[in-house]
Length: 313
Image (cartoon, rainbow, N blue to C red):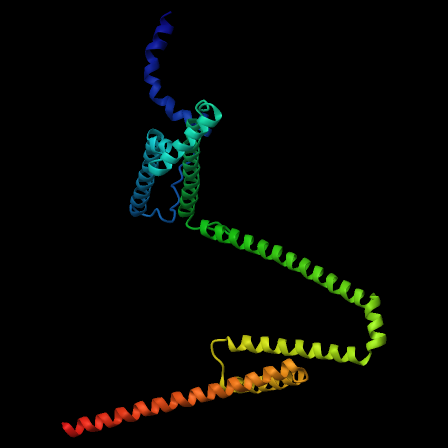
């Protein structure tokens, strides 16, 4: 009994030594002290201040959006009533519907509008989530001191998506054009086959002979002329033409004109057209001469007037 009492009274004397032995018994509870590694953007107090400012700004943004959503949730009157002309129009339609359908549907309109507000709020929540994810990503970038290898920013990701869509659209258009070309080719082939196999064409070839061949040549020549004309028109529509190219074009136009006349000159219509063109050209020349004469007269009278004024002075 005495020994137990002595033991209990002497226990407080040994208690200060227990903590000094404690770590040696349980080394896993005392991890070795390692100072934190310096990270980019965190040297000194500047980085900390900057992060604090960013956090405050994010908080402000979140608070503003929360207030906006709250106000929307409270003030659904504008959403419900529509405001002005739209509201009146909706009421009129509702009244007409009531007259036709024998009364208003039970809370139909209100329910629909309530859903639209809910959708709006849902969109707001989605936007908030997206922003939060973007903020997390940016924060991670700052703490790492840059993006991961191969990681792209939001703008680059969007651009990549847009390019992908464009490529897909291009492929689709290419496929459509290919199909269209195939259809045209099949049509032409069918026409050629029908031409070859047609009884009427065979009979014409037997009877017509040389005349038909001549007609084909003429048609081919006309088509060639038309193609050349279109090509020249495209060239003329360009912004600037060099002198050499312009002269070549004029030469070519002359050749085209001759070709056209050789094609059309054999017909009465071609003769009439040539005659009309000649008359038009003469009338144009006369008009130009008259214009130039009038201009010269004006210039002359102005010169004489100036001479007279000088004499008076």
